[in-house]
Image (cartoon, rainbow, N blue to C red; front, side):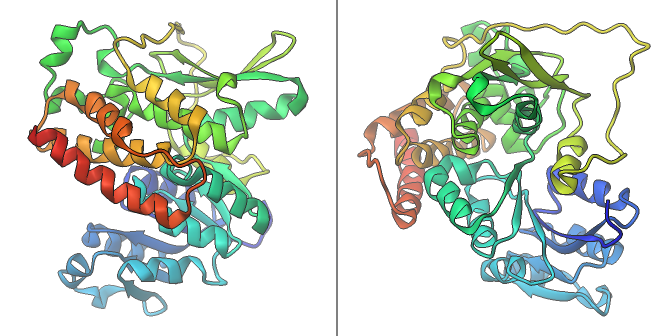
Length: 387
């Protein structure tokens, strides 16, 4: 890489992706510099990160959490900002070159949108930006000539594999899914799943919400929608295959039948680093495959009956418009209810289906309308649960 450090804003630095990103930055030998760190409620960890990485700005989004911490230990050249508006202010700073959007859920949309508006390169870990507002966000990025580099392991794999051919030679992409812990469960077993069961992912170490999404395969449904907008694909060009080992992260199939995939151990540091250093590849802290050990790679077709979330993702990719925003909001609310013990694991996807069916579809919504429907869908989940 060049001798000048690349200045990175890490939005959601205390979450799983954010912590992995800081490991990548720490191992970069000065090639990457954390210029902005932000968190919602984990202000104590945010303070410790600021002391270690000495960013230009530290953003505590929740004012209540920010008030609970003594910030006098901040480095003297680090400015504390608080509140949601501060996040937008920080990403617009001329000191920022790349914005890693690692805030989980719809909450990450505003920061990502502001970064695109400001012309920053986007390292996208917040898939919900494209799930909720894919048509609008990709148009804005094209207008501002802003590259969106994927951080999700599946989309990073597709991004890398696409470089092996010309776009007019592409037949389809195939997203791999671990299948989560319940890929072989019977309906009776699924009905008895507890929160602790659902949080025990077999191959990935992720946050609570994403882990539940993996167990329902809603995470793959959202990734289908993300891929549709990120790579400008038709829904018929997106396939899914279950791959329990999580070593092949996704594949591209060309019109001649050749399939190119990207392989590595399940370690988010690799796709994070690739997005932050692109177009260069550099040595880094990600785990490497041990080729001295015997390994087995398995692939299975997905069971749409056992995991109906996949059909919701394909439907949203086909119809676009308001569908993605409603599906995402309903799922976030339903997952929160499951984690709180209010509904069963097997209620999550039917609740999303019911809310999606109740909404009035609009093909070309504004951003304001999408945010209105986001709020409406969350309220509808509560109504559905009460009934």
